Image 1 (cartoon, rainbow, N blue to C red):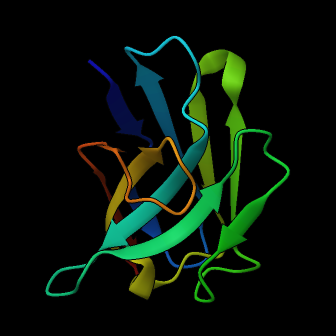
Image 2: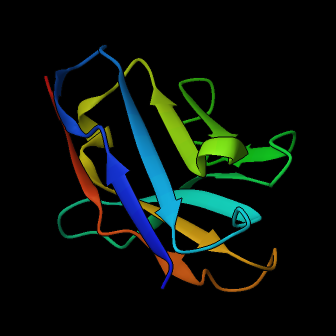
Amino acid sequence: QVQLVESGGGLVQAGGSLRLSCTTSGRTLSIPNMGWFRQAPGKEREFVAGIRWSGSSTRYADAVKGRFSISRDNAKNTVYLQMNSLKPEDTAVYYCAGRLVAGNEYDYWGQGTQVTVSS
C-alpha cells in the first residue's frame, strides 16, 4: 500500500521560511509525477507546485512563483517544497500528491501538514 507522509509544517512569521518534506513508502519505484497542493479554511484545494521524475521539469502556481521551490530526491523517495518569503495568505494545510501518468488525476495523497504564517 502506497503511503505519502508530509512533514515540516509549523508556525512562522511573515517573511520567514519553511521546508516541507513528503516521503513515499510502499512502492518500489518512485512515483513519476509529484505535486504539492494546499487548502486554506473556507477555500478549495489549489495546486502549488509540481515536478516530474527527473526533477528537471517543474511548474508553479502564479501565487508562489519566485518564492517556492519544489525538488525531489528519488533515492530517498522524498519530495521537498522550500517556501521562502512566506505571507499570511500562504496559511493552509499543505498536501503532497503523486500520480503515475502526467495529466491524469492524482492517484495518491498524503494526510496534510499545517502551515501557519503570522503577520
